Image: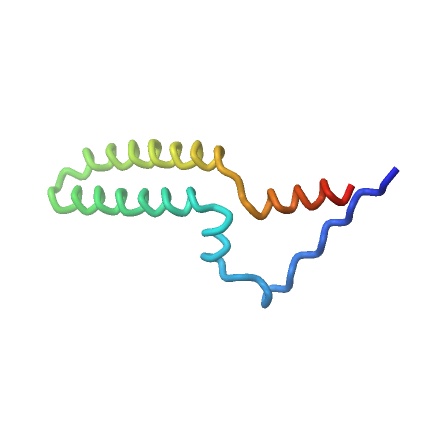
Length: 95
């Protein structure tokens, strides 16, 4: 019987890449779709403020947030992080 492999300690904060670089590697779909969501929401808010019809645009904002946010999470659930796959393969090889 083999003992379970130990989980390596995380690198020091100085050794870690910047947050945006980590997100590009581990969460590319979420990063892209949330950026699109932010731009769409800001555009709808600006349109409602300029036209004075903010109630209509508030309803559109809610629809955009629900649609894009839900789509982003559905797309994210169908992709994987290359780092976690490599770790899983290494753990399986060590057994």
